[in-house]
Image: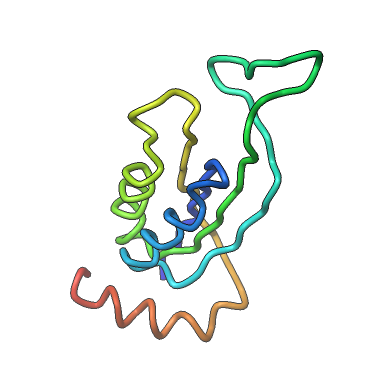
Length: 116
């Protein structure tokens, strides 16, 4: 099976919406790494050295290749990547090999059998 890792960096305000959208589009699970921060095109505003910015979550999805692009587009839509600078980013990476997915592979294969 050809798998992809989708990495989404989004404001913690959007994490649940992103996970819900990805699941709706075929993702079978997610891992969330919380309390990150980053800097985009425009540096965050500060007040006496304190930064006024929210936390960023890193959300990881392992999905089948045929579902990856539509999930990326769904994430972009709900997180508003094209509406505002600094709203987040999502990318997909090839997975050469993975273990620990045996229980999910049957579900993934069933969901994509019509698309292949």
